[in-house]
Picture (cartoon, rainbow, N blue to C red):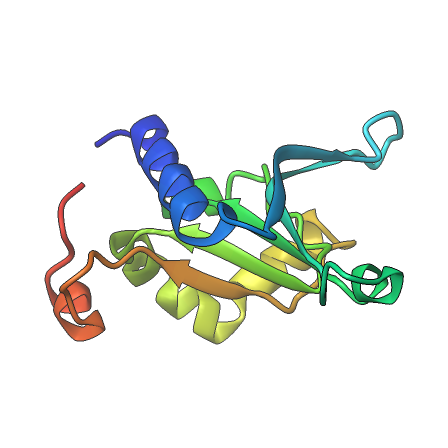
Length: 146
């Protein structure tokens, strides 16, 4: 599967697994400061209010940023990795995770993030697509072809 199709697959999976449902609020291709020299874009941004019954519940809500990355080259392309939420994630495949795992662990991704996106938080996680019925170990050892 090519990068475009992989990105669409991961985006659709993210939508159905995390973003759609009662009480969930999200937007895709979110522009932040688009009319400034510091404009950024987030693939998906989700807002989860603490509750939907009070103003304070909305004020205490959490913003989550998701950057969908189909491969290692996509991560290091310089596009994306806008982590401005209280929670931030790279959404990717197991094959990509295996390719970036050492970079993640030894701090290369953090170094790249600070150089290319200094305003981004360095607090982020990796969400890896794993098919239903597969264990993490099985998927890691033998990634499902897309």
